[in-house]
Amino acid sequence: MISEQRVILMSRLAMHEKKEGEENKAIGTYFRSDYISLRLIGSVIASALSFALCFALYVLYDSEAFIDSIYQSDAAGVIQKIVLYFAIFVIGYSLISYIFFAVRYRKARTRLKVYFNNLRRLQILYQRERKERK
Amino acid sequence: MTKLLEIRESIKSFYGKYENFILPVLKFILALVTFLTINGKLGFMEKFAKFPIALILALLCSFLPMNFIVIAAAVLCLLHVYALSLEAVAVVGIIFIVLFLLYFRFSPKDTLVVVLLPLAFSMKIPCSVALAIGLLGTPMSAISTVCGVIVYYTLHFVVGLSKSNGIEISEMATKFKSIIDGIVGNKGMLVAIIAFAATVLAVYFIRRMNIDHAWTIAMIVGALLNILILFVGDLALSTQVPVLGTIIGTIIGFGVAVVIKFFAFNLDYARTEKVQFEDDEYYYYVKAVPKVTLAASDKKVKKVRVSENGSVRNTVRENAAHKEVRNRS
Image 1 (cartoon, rainbow over the protein chains, first blue to last red):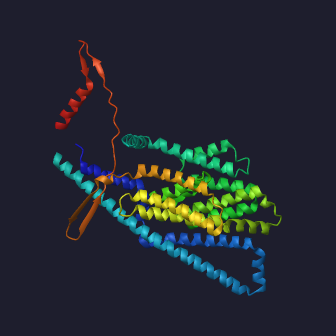
Image 2: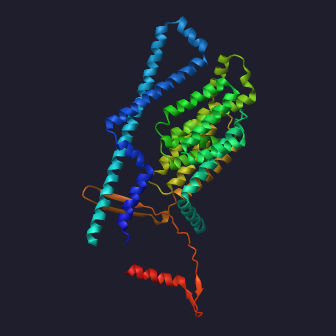
C-alpha cells in the first residue's frame, strides 16, 4: 500500500534535492566563518579587478588629461585620491557581499535543517512500517 | 476556458514526461536564435557569421549548462566587435568582464536575463522580459535586468558606430573617447535602465501583495509604468522613443505576461476561503485561494476481443473489476 505521508515526505526531499540541494549541501560543509571569508576573498579580488579595469577605461578615455594631471599637479595627491577611491569601492563591495553571503548561509542552514528533519521522519516511518509487518 | 485549461494540463504533463528531451531542444532553439540574431546584427567577422557555426555552437549549448549560452554569446559578440575595431572590443570586453565580476557572482541563475533582454529588445518587445522577470524572479533580478539593458545598448551603439563610419577617426585616444562617450553618455540607456528596473520591482512587489488578482494588477501597473517612464524620459531628455512601437511592444509584452500567468499562477478567486484559528503562541488569519486545475481527459481505449465461442468480452470492465478487488484486499 502506498503511504501518503511517506510520498509527501519523499516529494519534499526530492524537490529540495532538485532545486537547491547541491548548493545547500556545499554550503553546509563549511563553518560560517570559513564560508563567508572564502566568498569575501573572491569579492575582494573581483572588486579589485573591476576597479582596475574601470580605471584603465578612465585612463583610455582621456589619457592626455590624466598624464597632465600627474605631471602638472601633485602626483602624490593624485595617487592618494586613486587609492582612496579604490579602498572605498573594495570595502563597499565587500560589505555588500558579506551581508549577501551571510544571509545565504543562514538560509541554506535552515533549509538543510528542514531537509534532515524530513529525512529523519521518513526513516521513522520506514521503521514503523517494518515493525507492523513483523 | 475549460479547453484552455485542458491544453495547459496536457502541455504540463507532456513536459513532465519528456523533460529530458524537451529541455535540450529548448536550449538549442534559444541558443540558435541568439547566435543568429548576433550574426545578423553584428556579423562583422564573416568567418563566424555563417549559419553552420551558429548551428554547431547551438548544438553544443543544448547539452551544456544554460550559462554556457551566455558565455558563447559574449565571446561571439566580442569576436564580431574585434573585427570592427580593436578599441571597441577593449571597451565592450571591459564592460562584459566588470558586469560578470561584480554582479553574476551573486546570482548565476539570472545570467539568462542578459541574453533574453537584448533578444527581446531586438524583437521590439523588451517589456515582455521585464514583466516576466517581475512575475517569476526576485528583487535582485532588477539588477540582472539593468545588466541586460547595458549589454543591449552597448552592442546597439557598436552597430550604430559601424553604420555611421564613426570608427574612421584616426587617433586611437580619440577613438576610445568617442566610444566611451557614446556608451556612457547614452541618455536612452539611462532612461531604459530606470524604466525596466522600476517595472521589475513594481511587478514583483505588487504581485506579492495580499490583494485579489495581484498578478493581473501587477502586470497592468508594470506595463503602464514602463510606458510612462519611457515617455517622460523622452520628454525630459529627448531620447527619441518611438511612441507607436513602444505601445505595441508593451501590448505584446503584456500578452506574453498573460500567458506566463496562465501557466504559473492561475487562481480561482471566486472560491477564496478565509479561516481563522489559534495555537498556544499565535492567532492565524489564513486566506486560501484554490488553483484552477483540470485533469486532462484521458483517452480510454476499449479492447474488445471475441472469444472462441463467439461471445464478446469487454476487457476494460474486466480490468476495472480486478482493480476494485485488489483495492479491497
